Amino acid sequence: MSELANGVCEPCRSGAPQVTEDEMRELMAMVPDWSIETRDGVMQLEKVYSFRNFREALAFTNKVGEIAEAQGHHPGLLTEWGKVTVTWWTHKINGLHKNDFIMAAKTDIAANNQ
Ligand SMILES: C[C@H](O)[C@H](O)[C@H]1CNC2=NC(N)=NC(=O)C2=N1
Image (cartoon, rainbow, N blue to C red; front, top):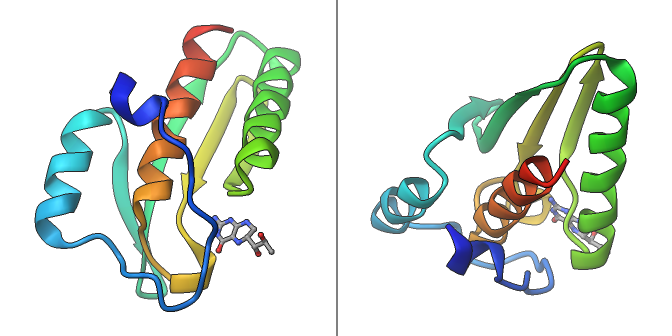
């Protein structure tokens, strides 16, 4: 996962290729705790993180927001008492790009450092 976590997102552009089946298999192995959810035909990477209370959940949410801003690639974030659901996909291509896996790995690092 560290190779992914050290990755840098490339600028999102429409027309960029979605990951292939083989690439997805390879990348999923690097972020094993994440799942693929398909919503309205759009494949998304998703993981639920647990926290002791809302304040810790909110702190993590903001940390992920900072990483997203730094990389110019943004997640869906559902922040609840003791839980944050993080969802990564590439809006411009309505699917999954390597950027999303890079960001999932960076999200795990942020959680491990909280
Ligand atoms: C202009 C701006 O860089 C683009 O709209 C970026 C912003 N963040 C993004 N985040 C995600 N997840 N997908 C995108 O296509 C995307 N596009």
